[in-house]
Length: 198
Image 1 (spheres, rainbow, N blue to C red):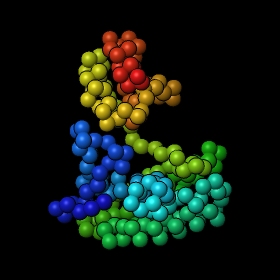
Image 2 (image 1 turned 90 degrees about the vertical axis):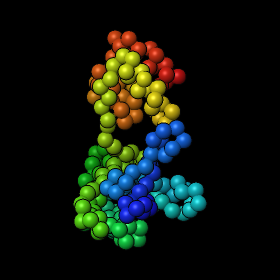
Image 3 (image 1 turned 60 degrees about the vertical axis):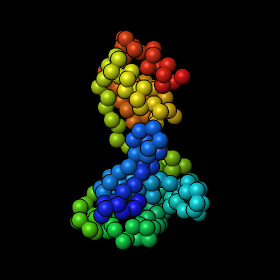
């Protein structure tokens, strides 16, 4: 995260593009949220010129989520937050909501911008291998040719994800996109499926 014209700026942590060859940029509160999410979910080796950076949660891989480890993780997060963000952000609270049955830990980091006083929070979900992340889904209501054109425009920066039928949501899902009106009766069903899934 850097500062441009007194605004915080960052590029999308998932590598999405605003247009072909142009990185998607975020500013101010979205840039902060993006940077904090990367800080929480990165792994050692994710940073090309600094292979020792990242992976704040790596040392807790496969550890039991008992009170002792949760306390250590919280101290580590607080200390790391101060090291990386104390010149621009103030940490208000770190909250853990462990789901012992499913081995998932919800981490909420509450903070405020020292410069503006604006408060916000980021949420990350990690499991025993710290690979599970939750993010907000975006609903796409297009159908037929409009949906096909949306996929054509988006696929260059989103080609890794596959189109699947999510049995929990009972909707077709393409990564973070929920196709709310898409079904096998759509006139472009076969073309959209072929375009995304190959």
